[in-house]
Structures are given as structure tokens and as C-alpha cells.
Amino acid sequence: MESGNGNGKRALEEAGPSSGLSSASGIDGSKQEITSDAFDDGKEEEEEAEEEEEGGIEDSKNGFFVPGPLLSLKEQIERDKEDESLRRWKEKLLGCLESDLDDKLDPEVKFHSIGILSEDFGEIVTPLPVDEIRNGCTLFTLWEGSCYQLKLKFSVLHNIVSGLTYSNTVWKGGFQVDQSKGMLGTFAPQKEPYVYALKEDTTPSGALARGVYSAKLKFEDDDRRCHMELKYLFEIKKSS
Image (cartoon, one colour):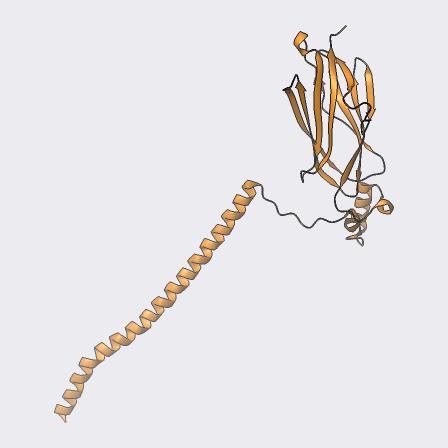
């Protein structure tokens, strides 16, 4: 009996530790594998979140913006119509133009006239578009060293025009001698035309400054939509 028990005990001693270690290794290995997988998954999610955040910051730095769908002005007015305060705000902004609205999406800026303001002669207004007869003719004459402003009269149709800008480039003898740019702003359709004067400028002085100049006045919005490109001539004369 003792011999049998001794053999059995020795067998257990020989098999037990090895068997127990093997079993424990299997459990611990499984736990380590699960823990490692969970850690890797968590790390991947963290890296993805960081990439998304960095991507968002990068997009913001690069000025990327994904606008919503373009709606006609009629659709914009009809939305949230049950909100009384919002309805009144829209009416104030748009000048109660609901009866004149259509379903066109793209805004249109219609220019009625261009004027030149100067203390030397007051105001000269030229209707737009320029008649073919006057095409290539001098629209106005300025004295050297005088201050002047360009004045525009225009209407906005169909939808709100956003970020309306202008650029005015001037040439003499085939060489560019001046360029000015500026922001007019955002304009909604309204019954009365807008009147806008560009920033004041001063003509150059001296013998070389006198003569005829060619110029190009261009208006674009945020979507790089060109609403007018006007080529015109003007002359600078010796002051009396």
C-alpha cells in the first residue's frame, strides 16, 4: 500500500507541478493576450481620435469649410415660419420681398450706374452697361493731385450675395501702375438699390502722371462668381 501510495505520490509530484504550471500558464497567457488586445485596441482608438483631432485642426488652419446645401431665398424664408421673432427678423433683413422672390439659388448683382465724386467738379454719373457708342471713350477726367471716389448703384436679386469684393486695376502705356482691392460686404435682396462709395483715392501729380489711363473694375463674391467686369478709360490733366 505504501509502495502504491508512494508511487502515486511520486507520480503526482512529478505530474502535479508540471500540470499545474501548464494550466496556470494557459490561464495567464490567455489573460495576457486579452489584456494586450484590449491595450492595442485602446491605443488604436486613442491614435484615431488624435488623428481626427489633428485633422480637424489642420482643416481649420487651412481654412477648409463644408457649407450646408444652398437654398433659395424663398425656401429660407419659409423655413422656421412658425417662429415669430425669426420671421420678423427675416422680414426686416429682406424688406418684405416675399411676393418678388423666385426659386433661383444663385444671387445676381445688377449694377445700374458708376459715378465719380470729386471736390473739383462734383459728381459725374455714367449709366451701366456702358453704351457701345461710348465704349473706348474717356468716362471722366480728373485733375492731378485731386481726391476722388468711385460710387456704385446696384441691386441684389434672387438670393443673398456673400462677401462681395472689388478690384480696380489701372494701366498707362501698357504698364500696370496701380491696383486697389476691398470688401463691400454681404447684401440681401431689397426693393431699393444699394449705393456704395469706394474708398477715397488721390491722383498722382507731375508731367509723367498726366495722360489717359485704362482701367478694369471687377466684382466677385465668396464663390468667385463674377458679377461685373467693367473696362473704362479716364484722363488726368494739369490742374488749373
